[in-house]
Length: 361
Image 1 (cartoon, one colour):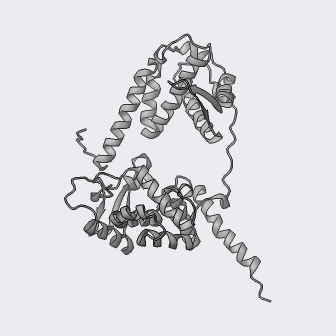
Image 2 (cartoon, helix red, strand yellow; image 1 turned 180 degrees about the vertical axis):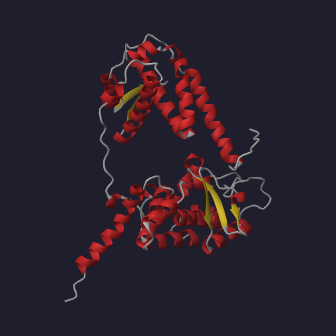
């Protein structure tokens, strides 16, 4: 795909978004024509990833209406009418979310039955998608009533502070030791580690230092970094651009990787490359993080932590070291400070433990 990019975003991000936009438009062509206005609304109000997620949920719902109900006589999505949607009541949506979606069965081409289950968190997202759809159609005067007020609530488990999964100081040291020395790797893993150890160390340090999201790190290009100014640019959610300072540890880790391990002749814009010389995938990054964290925690590869747990580690560690919650919120790009406050509980727990265990007499 050729890109004529006149934005500040990297070509890779523009290509990714163009690919997702094409997927959305392909689904749009499958949908009834009366949903065109809704798609235009989403295009101007939410991110492409949210637009895509909503459309996938809505497509699943429309297929359910065709395959599992008598609401419509349509055989394909395009043939569903507004009159048929208007016949739906809140209880129909509640049944879809509360009963059908929790566990449903699909038969594959070989006649084998597959079981699908959704957690309350997944159901809540589907509810959000349908709420957005039906509220818009009502506001847009395409449906006579707003049935969303009758949707049943879906209770989500509250995330308790001590349930937050993160690495602790000793585990962080073990993690950095493992990625720097290869200790704890299998013989086969060490073969690959010898070729990627500088890359892997730089990736781990970026996660721990900045609390980057997986996509933010995977999207980094060589041109994202301005070493003379000791800063680099990342693109957050909703195309927000952030300029981050580079400390000496990150500077040395990145320049060592770029000078000694990353192929100088590569035509790839990406900072982090696979052994095939291509941009490393998000899945590969997730796998290497799970591998090294499993060594640090002395657990199985399967039970190693994801990049998001390193984001939690960065937040918790900074707060424990006395940094302001609001400063950490800005660094990690949390929309709401209450998200950051969850990590502050670890610091309060530490204070309580000190008071309980310390007896001056």
